Figure (cartoon, rainbow, N blue to C red):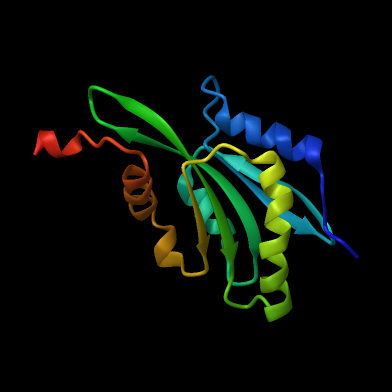
Length: 142
């Protein structure tokens, strides 16, 4: 059976993260059978990381604030998490299913495909987003 996505529910979760008037800075889309649905959102990046288990395959849309005292900017990233215990067929399928997620999640600075928890460290993600973001004035403060 072909994978489908709950477009309305996923779009609502996506917009919560993008909205500057909410504290929500991440949302997760998971599989329920052959349907991709929102499976949580929150304000603490560590809560997002806890959802990335060895048995999970999911898509995370995350807001990271970058910049310095003079200029703070919200940067967004799409993270595809594939746990170590996910079968080869499911690993292959997540790549094609990502196109469904990208119909909803269209604005992000950088995309990650991760299966190692160390690569999920917030500092690593922030550093990679800074590299993708053009001008970096942090060096002037050193």
